[in-house]
Image 1 (cartoon, helix red, strand yellow):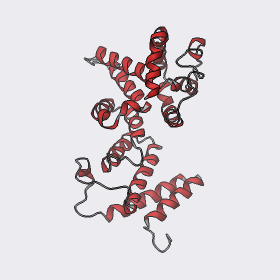
Image 2 (image 1 turned 135 degrees about the vertical axis):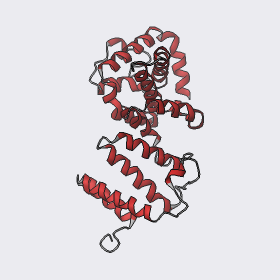
Image 3 (image 1 turned 180 degrees about the horizontal axis):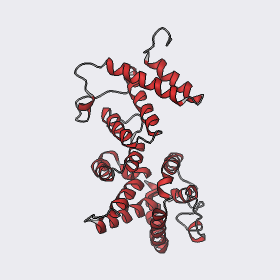
Image 4 (image 1 turned 45 degrees about the vertical axis):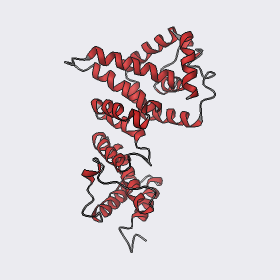
Length: 267
């Protein structure tokens, strides 16, 4: 197919996936770039990516003709992030989200926090969380709540920052909220970071594996994805120390917080 039609979008995407399965990442990335080139050359003159952020250009993912652009752009983001081009990945993630902000068919919102933290765009992540929380219910996503807390924590450590105390207090409050909403994430995160949890944490009525046996499959999957993607940030000594201090606070008030944890689980 590609021999006769070298810019057939679906064939390029499929060939990219086959190349990736055979560990030929360079060929896989080249196929996606060729697909994006073909798509860009076929855009209508009135369709401009730069205007999609203002809601002028919108694509419906349910239309089969539009899916090639979504998938190619998503795979391109993954390939360039593997080269540590995190700022570019963040900007393209914004673009992909803007094409269908309501639906977000490829769940790029699960990656935006990763690229924002890796590219040191802490203020953007905080603004994004505050702007979209009511609309997208970001506080119910473990990645957004944990990463936004981390963004506040990093801002509180920057030299010359005038709002250090306010940022530190906000970081502590958000991390505490995240641990109460998603207690099952803690032991997995500590294990991935190579930190051995103490006996009090392992046997606690909030964080123990027994206490989190009935976690839904979907939530567990989201937590596992976050731990896999972000554990390198959390394993830094200063972040481990900060996390441990919040764990101590939660364990100290464990008896009074159990009802709050149960209320979160019902949601």
